[in-house]
Length: 492
Image (cartoon, rainbow, N blue to C red):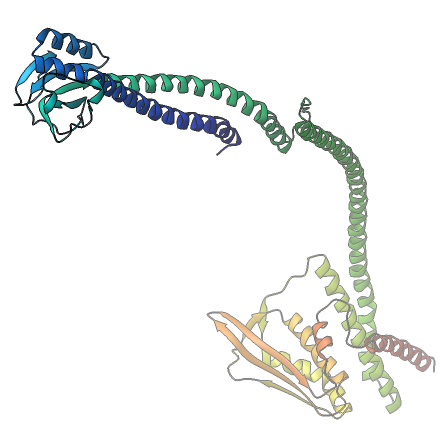
């Protein structure tokens, strides 16, 4: 229930409730007083005329009886007046209706019917004063036991006038209540609107504030409480306006800074793009240089190897043969390095392709093992090659790459194995139709690799130990020393 409705009920309901209560009490009191007054007036008139009626009835004076009954009939509300003798016969009847014959009443009776009252009053005189009447000794309420009945008076009173008067009073009070209710409604409505309109305006202002409309301004009110409310809402709106302006300023400043940052980032991206292109060009030049240098180095190196072979066929003493073998071995290692550099440059240039040629895997493994047999014999190691029976032959693939990888694995195993054995295994891993997957493994009893070294095994330019680079440097140094020895030997 809204505050406006509550105010209307409070300002309108209580006065109307008081008015309705007073109206009900007034109707009850008026109706009671009217009935009491009518009863007293009827009883007073009948008691006043009762002695005269009894005397006239005893004398049989009809003219006098009619006069007195007419006086009773002229009373307000009296509808019928009847006189009866002691035998119950009707002596005189004046009015609109005929009263029913009843027994003589022993005392005064007032019968209340639906829309009429009936007053029955006995008439009697003392027996010793049958011809003379003393009004001062007559009691209208009750005749003494020694008195004799000469009749009774029956008066019928119409009470519809009382009911009609009550209804008129109710109607007038209802009309007055309606007028009073309308007046009170207008007063209550005006008061409630005066009290709730500023609250509704404040509510509407808060709703607009919640929607982001901070340009409102409420007019001040005369009431101190409402004046404080409107002033606080106006202060809140001004605070929101200032906060919105500050936020807009910060947004513009942040947007400007972001735009400057974007421009700086764009310039950096351009510089990075130029640097990236320059790096790509430098990398291409480097790859091309490596490829060219690999070819340039491999040509004289092949010549050195050829001359070493020719020199080995000549007559040399044992010491010279050992020097020549060292030179030949160093040349082979250096040629292997040059081939690796050439392959690496091809990989960077995406120009490395695998050949498809017939392969005799048994002969290829025997050839690689034969190349490393002198090194295994020198270190007194067992170099064993096992090709399983389920490996099919012949096969089609790139024998050069298989030879290169297997040669590197066996060389690495012999390098880091001081005693024990190096075993080369070739097994069938999977075969689907014409496609065959072989598993070539090289196991040794050397120092092995830790878990960290195994994780970094296939990273570019990574080695398990820094001694690898020193080993390759030693190969070049050995090659240079062998060349010097050959030069000295040729001079002799």
